[in-house]
Length: 416
Image (cartoon, rainbow, N blue to C red; front, side):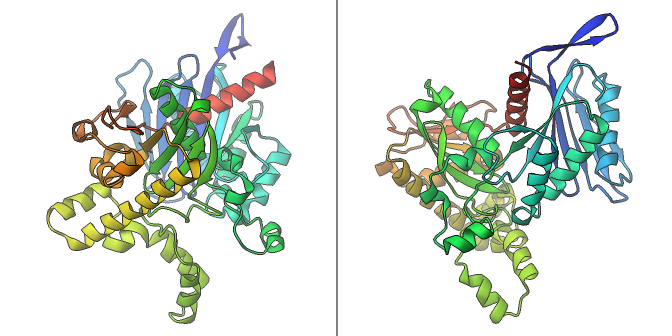
């Protein structure tokens, strides 16, 4: 879609999309030109509401990409977006630009209703608000970002792209927990999954890397960042994923425990006298790698292992063991696996994690070539030997581009 917008006697092609990712105290943003999918600018506003708020803005189009930084109080999300808009305007890319076609918002939880991106109206916003009880840490911040952007550009299409949408194709037997059905339905308890934009993008790019269409391949995607999740993707559709009602379930993460016996929470309440909030903080912020060894940076953990640190080594082994369990389980779910794909910060950059996760899985047709695995590159690439029956790949994720693509496509449909 290229929508000409009159500006005086000239017309400008509206093919820019601003992507916003609003957190509780931060706003990440990227401006993309969808004519060639290039980035025009990226930025981050963090520590919103503090005296030491920080904005870092990097123009990327027609410049040397030197960043500009502001330090000082930014009171709220409205002030944060206005500050970001000022930086974009300084580059001739302001929110009033006729080239701006839409604003795409990352929304973490879309429940079962939102299976694809939607243009935001009052009813959509109300439904996102109704989902706050199942996403109390994320949806409120997403809503603030949406309302602020609407106030700044009420005439511009605002699109919600949901982290959960890609996973709504899971069959009911994979999405349901084995608890009382009436209780589950009354409180929307089921597996929703997260990181969906990343899993969608990476599984599609993996198919391209194999020279096939998404409909032809079965892929296991391992999104390994500070938050981590796995998905089983059959013919372009998610059939299983590791995160559940919340992003706590599944793999060992930077600060989250991942899979744990639910009775641990009862035990901590009864025996340790911990409150529900204290247990919540323990499992979400003081567990995972940081709970096991005090670090959630895989580079630091590997450095400590090289120095003989046994606690770091155990944390690494627990992390990798969980990965292997999911690779094996999802191989059984898919029946046939064409590729196992690593992505996100750890997945893209930690050769030792990739090597250890695949080691010993030769009977599954999996292997890693040491030289290919060690080589650093920002491009999608195979790291398995030619003889391997199942490809092992590294595909850098691009959630912002995926949000922009989905936003632009939806706006194009609306104009047709």
